[in-house]
Length: 286
Image 1 (cartoon, rainbow, N blue to C red):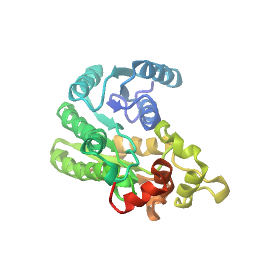
Image 2 (spheres, rainbow, N blue to C red; image 1 turned 135 degrees about the horizontal axis):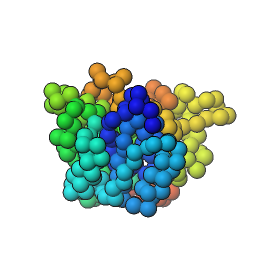
Image 3 (cartoon, one colour; image 1 turned 90 degrees about the vertical axis):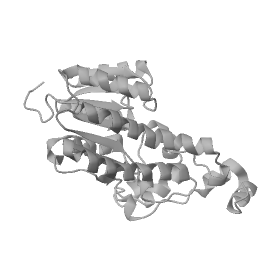
């Protein structure tokens, strides 16, 4: 691998690194010379993706760590493993999270609502909390947010709340860690074609509703939504030297979706709870 690549000598860790946004971002970072530690819960998937990266990028330095990005001890151990690859840590990308439960507020329990906060916000808090002390030479921390942080989405109250909290936290972290030359930013995808969103992409009426709210839809007959590669480009920018004067920001990578609005997906609530259930939900009766 050429030594004049912009990320040569840098070490990165990616939580949720075996596919989707994490995997696409790993490829971009490795292509530009970074050594990358992939963290995820399934060792076989991590090993499979490591083999792919090693095949696609000659000389790639890739490690794997099987663990849960929502568990403190696992996060700390993975970070140490990443640091030990080259005696430094420069880039942290946390992609752990999920799209919420598409559940009306009056159907939630404290535990179900809390679970979304834990996966989408607390996972990022732990990544920042434990990565920063290892960034001896400064560094870049990148979190994956969502347009839901800025645009309300009915029946995704848990997810909207978690991502809004994440973006507030990013600003606080950027302010505090700037003196250590650590930058903290986020990318804010719209609906993106990853495994956990497959049901929405395969539901053409729902898919079309999102396309209608996306200015860069490549034409009504060839409408498209986001891909992991779209998001990976922004991650690579924030990780590298071109973004050395950028911190405390969240960039919408959504084809312009935030210029419009989220679609009304009440039909999914009806499918789950029936028309009678929807009437009770709208009357706040649960």
